Length: 239
Image (cartoon, rainbow, N blue to C red; front, side):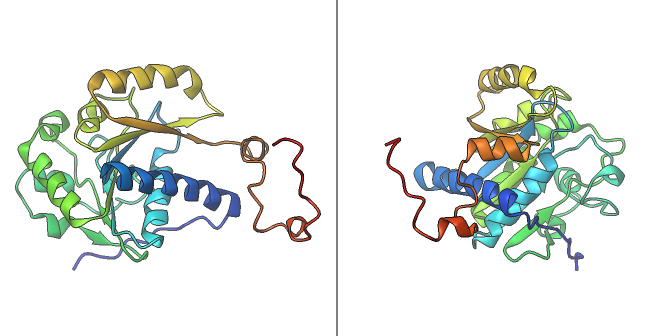
């Protein structure tokens, strides 16, 4: 039996609120368009794509949706990954015909959330595996077995992999970090995904300061702050 993967969900109320907004938008895309598989890729390395993928997967699962988090980064050594350390059987092994899909699906400590690791990437050709018919077959199986499939891939400017995978998912989401250089890469990344034929549905801005978040969402703490409970805050001046 595969071991259980322990995932840790943030308890910061502002961050939880931000992910609730993302979940609402993702669920709306499923309801309106039938999208189930969502590929997440960064404008550049280090923007927190893996963290976003994990938190989004947990948030979806906590609302009762059967969710799978798929690690499709075939170039990074598992020893340097947050979740795949000491897990050596995964996606690459399935593509090579060494195992079936059930053997590479791991339960997590979050109800309704499973995890599929990338597997060993040593001495393997990621490009050839990305074009494999077995990968397309697997994605079809996962789409029929889960309510949501969240696909975590490398940054757009680090390899060709996300460009290939972006057209295999129902929708793609860009991750940008406002405290880095993502702003100058954002428009270029958007244009490249659209040129690839990907269905780009939006951008998640990561590493936003608390002050910037408050400016963006004025009443983010509406349901937690006592000052909103006395009924003396109502104003219609701006309507």
